[in-house]
Length: 568
Image (cartoon, rainbow, N blue to C red; front, side):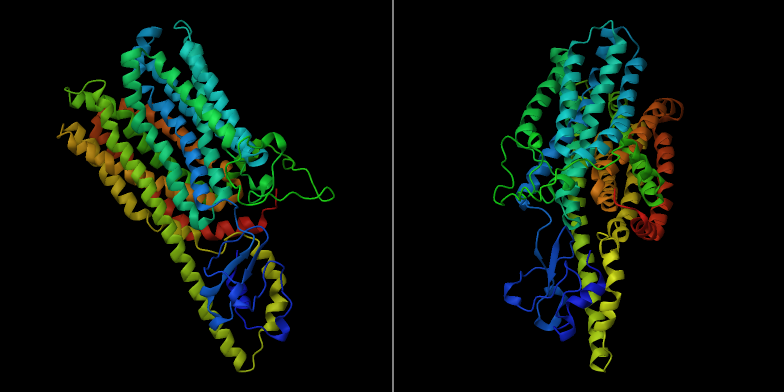
């Protein structure tokens, strides 16, 4: 992080008292011809900053030396694209199951309620399992945990395709294992983004990454309906097994290790067993191979206890975001799971196959929302950086005016540098992260509540089918925008623990989602869809004070945590 005071130092004209750099990572470059032409506030390992002498303009501040990541912009998109594709499997395995529930109830000789219990257990393990895998990925690396999760998902899918119909208990167990393998890849993907992307890029990458989890609810019911209707319910599990096997081979051959504790910016080779057989990424940058005298084996951090992830829940600013995300996700998932029964009841001309098409507007709206809000988040971050630089420029001009009047500030800079260097190690912690990320939340919440209530009443009143479909599109767009905003700010809070913080987010939202599913059918039967969604939106409205508290006190809590936390 480059503090305002550090900007003043960098933009001071070279004087006798400032010929020696005050900190190895910060130095003045009097030769503007050798400097790049773009400005940034991003920090990283071993970065050096230089400034041109031209007018002491803070816009001339540039990053020189070691980049945040060796991967090009295109290579980053490729890596995030692979992570998004892997993140597709969890919602796909959940939603592809819905059209086959009646057929499976007949095959196993169980009630639909008991088959629905496997859906609830799937969501419970969706929330619990990433708490384990996320902590392991932040210590042992992304790549080995990715491959382990894919293998677990592959084996459980094969088991589900072969499960005997007189073993309902085995169906339940295998669905839990399937959830444990699939859901964890969402947390892993967020960790990968925190490894390779700066905060200025993170919003756009989060938007792309969210496409995977959003496409699943859109295409899952269509695939499930076609497969179970034409080839039987076992075919949908064979489909998942084949798709997972292909992904396992592809990622095993090409997906690189990205954990910064192991590979730094990507230039340090990981352990031999953790390298890609076909290294197609980062080939233009030579790998940094230390000599034998300086080589230190990379080992997991001491005390690698996955249960330490639960300490995240003790942080008030994080907990507020987790709760609000969980409530919004519960509303989002409620609309997903009630679409088939509500539409079949309100519009009798729909069939089991055609009702799957009704998920397309919802999924498309969510996918579009995640992409659009990702671009908006990047734009907001750039504008915030420009304001910070502009403010620093004004302060520097004031200091220079004082210096011209005989007030020498160089000694003051030097005396206070020790205190500044300790604070400077906090990555971006003095920047208004909460204000920048949450500025769009109020209008999004207003749209979400209005569209959700309208959806419930339109289905209950059997309005033209286009009405609930359009409202579903709006709900999908807005809810995924809010979820993407919250996911991005969580990774901003814990940039070195992207997988762990995302696992915590997944834990809260899946448990709240499972609770919502367990009560929504009795509520709809008792008070009808319209009043049910009025109740759900009233609960969602309670998250607005949480955002206000986060906006007001979040920066203080975050800075206090970063000052008191010890490196792990």
